[in-house]
Length: 116
Length: 113
Image (cartoon, rainbow over all chains, first blue to last red; front, side, top):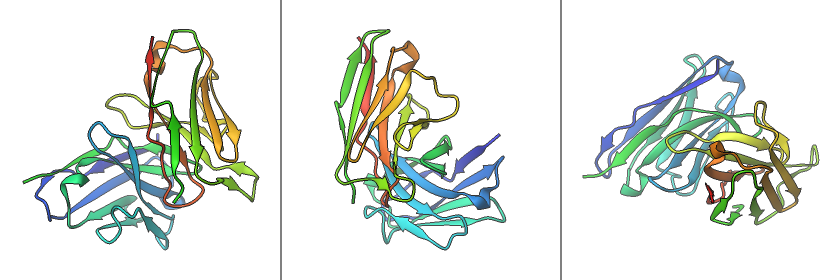
């Protein structure tokens, strides 16, 4: 069974840093492109970042470019999102998702709250 | 960046009736290699992650009921639920996966009338 499990979401102060993790299982993790998508409370989905299967190619949304960095460790079947210079508007549930065509599997999400 | 615009923002339909949600992209999302549109539809119920319903604009994901169908091409796309069931109450999103950033529409909230 394909599973994606996010972790690392906590309450953090503005300006702080956080690293989210997404552990994949039940599929050959190294073969798949992966994404991070977030959803602010009561709002829609916002695509954030993508990484190709071997980690050689990444792209970030303008809203997080220069502050967030996606990476992966295929030996550990884990996707990461390093989040720096956090702002109140980064408060959201963060999802990791696998993609083939469209995002066919999603994790349950991890909540990041940025507040003093 | 490709802007995805859905209409309407919310929709109320009677049980058993047809529901139609539209999605317009600001530029073509046609993938030249296979001549298919790089457009996906998702369903999101409260407290759950999104669920992939449709990809390549009209291909139903495995396990998705056949009352869900996708159509359209170029820049105009439609998700149709042929006979609304109570369990279809959700927010529906379109997404283009043609080019990064892989933008979503703003969502359409579907309710029972």
